[in-house]
Length: 82
Image (cartoon, rainbow, N blue to C red; front, side):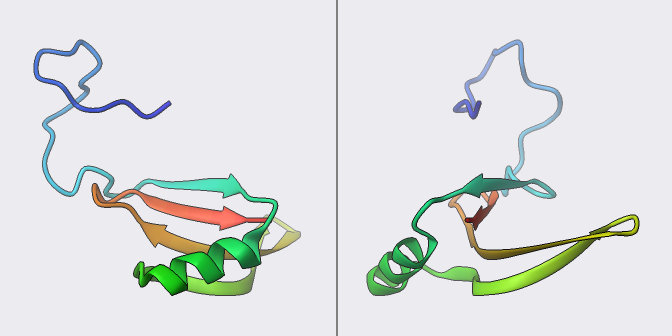
């Protein structure tokens, strides 16, 4: 869950400083990754990383996925995969 910051909220765990999303990235599975990429490009939204295939290692296991990354206005990195 993402929640808009509000003064006095009990959930604040530290000082809020821009950019709020430092060090956080969310992976979101999207069923139409090419269409999402095309729409972002058509709208001129800045891509943190364009659509491409990446392989990540988890110990001895390799995970390969197609992905694109954007950064929202608060600094959160959103990684869309299919």
